[in-house]
Length: 181
Image (cartoon, rainbow, N blue to C red; front, top):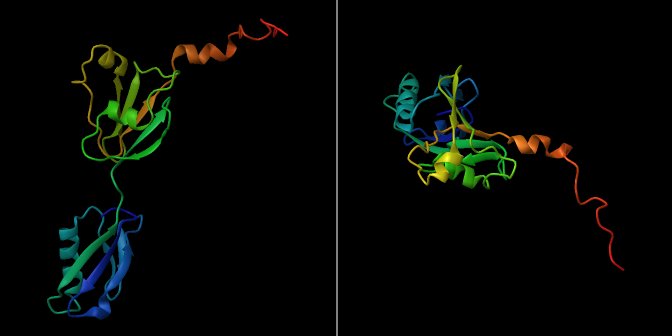
């Protein structure tokens, strides 16, 4: 369970304790009828069921509880920078960095795809950053070094050098030709 996950609790023999749409709060706790606040963050559904049995076991004799997960934070990655559609994307199955770029609409002309940065959270306080040369992988037609994304990863595609100065280059088309009547 993670913050904003929701679930239903059903008691076979004590339906007065049934609860629908229990939401995990940002601090990892839920507030339950009859037992108060219970910490559930980081637990799987079977672990949660056992935690609830223990909590309700103080007021009920051997409670028979079922937990139904309703809504949960789906694994995701973020694509940012010089891709066609920057944003947050659902991470399904095994997805590589180049597949993630394709999901985000591919590189823009202004992309420096020789220096794609893959940010990965190591723990709550630290992230790692790895520089990936996608241009080289594609030129060599060798995707063996194409890393698989983990939930929460962010890929950032910086601007290439030309796109940084392009706005300052004179436009050769302005006033160069007059229309023929």
